[in-house]
Picture: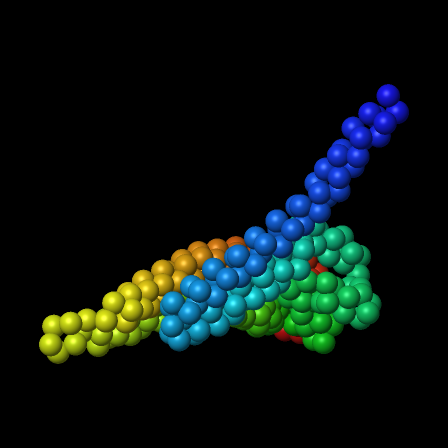
Length: 247
């Protein structure tokens, strides 16, 4: 009985050891297979795919950067305007508080510009204060639109680069046709792969880039409207601290 138990327990331990090792081996082999497939696709697509790969890397980096930079907390926090009005209810805050407000977000920079304008010119008029807000708003919108033109350019250029690869592939296809009527199957297959892979890859880059470009453009428009409304609300509030002009 003891020997039987020892023989029955040994295969279980061996199976458990193989069960632990096998998934890692399978994943390693799968990753190697995926890398080999990717390299074979790049080789089949030819040299025109390298500009498309560069565009895809740039587009991915810009999309991640814009997602982080255009977050609600960094641009226009929800309760920021109410907090500014509450702090300035009795008097204008100290310069260090205004500096912290300017560093907090894009909207904070715009609101802090209005406070600094009132401090710099205690007799400022309503038109002068609105001009200060408009100038700060234009600078803020320019900051929000950073890299969007580059992303839009990639969305427009990627299909053209894919089309260029298609044309190059077609040239190779026609070049593989011998004058006597014979053809080279290897050159013919390579030309077809160059044409199809570059067309598909160009569309794979252009479609997401265009979608994210439109999405970020909509975010910038929404934030611009929020900053305009916040400035309109803060103008009469800050004018209470302006001294009336003589005459």
